[in-house]
Amino acid sequence: HLMAGGISGAVSRTVVSPLERMKILFQIQSKGAGSSYNGVVGTLAKIWREEGIAGYMRGNGTNVVRIVPYSAVQFATYEQLKKLLIEEGKTELDTPRRLTAGAGAGIASVAATYPLDIVRTRISVQTAHALANIDKLPKDARGRPIIPKMPGIVETFAEIYKNEGGLRATYRGFGATLAGVAPYIALNFQCYEVLRKLFTPPGETAPSGTRKLVCGALAGCCAQTITYPFDVLRRRMQVTSMSGIQYKYSSTFDAIKQMVKSEGILGLYRGLVPNYLKVAPAIG
Image 1 (tube, rainbow, N blue to C red):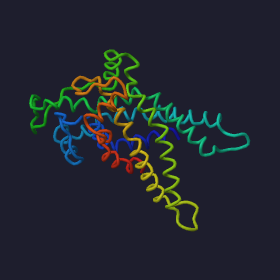
Image 2 (image 1 turned 135 degrees about the horizontal axis):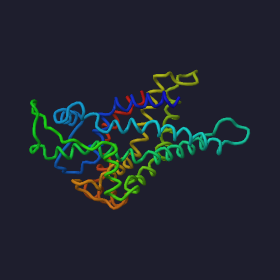
Image 3 (image 1 turned 60 degrees about the vertical axis):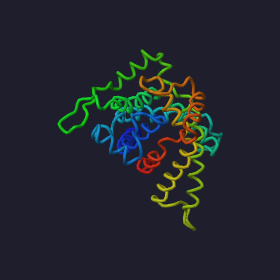
Image 4 (image 1 turned 180 degrees about the vertical axis):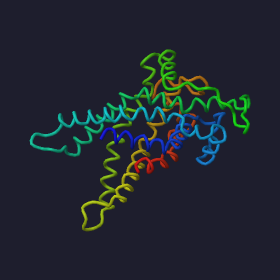
């Protein structure tokens, strides 16, 4: 099951990688940023023009590497919590206990693999910063800028660890992530249950496979819309210490205050459109 889950997870993440990278670029781009990524179509065209097909996949390798340990920790933690929470004489958890076990497993898996997540974010945005001075870069035969060799997973992790504060630096933004895990799981579950009942035809006990897919996609969109600001805050905190970043935050609360002041409430929803676009393909 773990192997099958890892393979399917790798495929789904690779399929939506262009949308995921675009979402991250939107999230970390502050209002009035010099290197501007605007609109879904415009950004996809800009990445293709400046970076080619490789630009759509930047950071995806780290995401794929993260799948197996993430899934393993999530599964093991859920099973242990299930044993601790299950009532005597029963074989399944009730809804509150299942949500608790799910939230605990989600937090444990995120905590175990968070350094890979911050590395993934850095790799996704480092070329964008190099391209901020695109006029100064040499061009290839097709007129595409020649991007300097960028650090990989190991080099990026080592740079964060050595130059930004050790292990603690590799968990920058973890507080915002934790704050969003439990609400997301609870909302996703509740939305799915409500939609499942609405999509179940009269006289039947469950919706068809296609309708279940629609329920999952809609439930994911609903839950992500409400908890999305936590994701933006996580990405901002992950890159705030990078050179070339215009904003500097001392904490998650400082990030909220500065973002709302300079970018308004909508600043907390940067990248929401590509996030919606990747929900259905990822679930499928």
